[in-house]
Length: 346
Image (cartoon, rainbow, N blue to C red):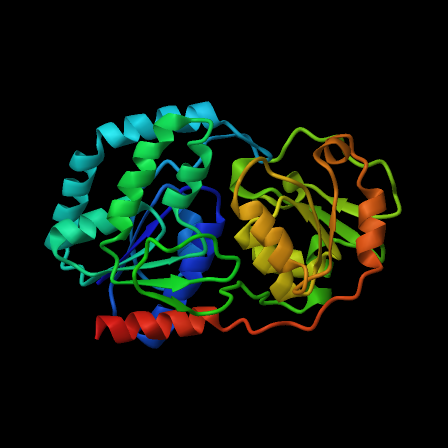
């Protein structure tokens, strides 16, 4: 059995790790899989075919967000202190589960607790990610000194990892002794673009999707222009099964996505050949790396938080529509990651 542990911070960790595990399932259909996460179980089961054991478990704190655009640093520090107080009990409980379930390998994206539990259980662990929580917390500790302790705890746990499968847009991952770059892990659309547009009821106007993932949509004014067809979360969320669509199908159907840059939505847009209008997301150290490194891979344009919240996004949408879409890059990271996981397991 392989046990996957997922950070609960947004959906990007889930989408990419599930792509790797889905490829593992395709290659080894009889291999038992378990997933521990606080994300919705239905999303995991839609991403990974076949049977699996899902455990609704809080694996880490991540960051506490006031909304999709604003980090609550004080609440993050307080939540980390509470989590730290229960660390040993959580790690021992997970180690017991790993031993009793016959787990042979832990894959984690990228909660430190998973690596500590695997170490206590005497089981190898492999990480997947483009950043680690020790790096994030060390950055925020300049204003929230109490986050220095969770940063050190995370670094000590990550040191137990046998390997990190490193993704593009990477921050400081030096805490992992052994790292291998596997390239972009990205979800691909399943339906042709015109069929996805038909199911969404889109007309000939350029379609613009407002998408802010698991952290919630900020309180923004709806754009007034009828030049574009606007798709808000209420137009999509909860309707995917009914319409026979995946979220990458929706991204493929539209012409522009408006979002904050995170690994999940950026790679969805790259894989679909869809343009991106992005806004800043607070002092999150992954942000400048994503902004810098995504630019050669997709057509993108910045909009300020102020303009976004006021509904003034028609200008950036027009500008990004004038940009050419780059040729698609190599998107075989999930295949390489799955092959490496299976070799490690063997």
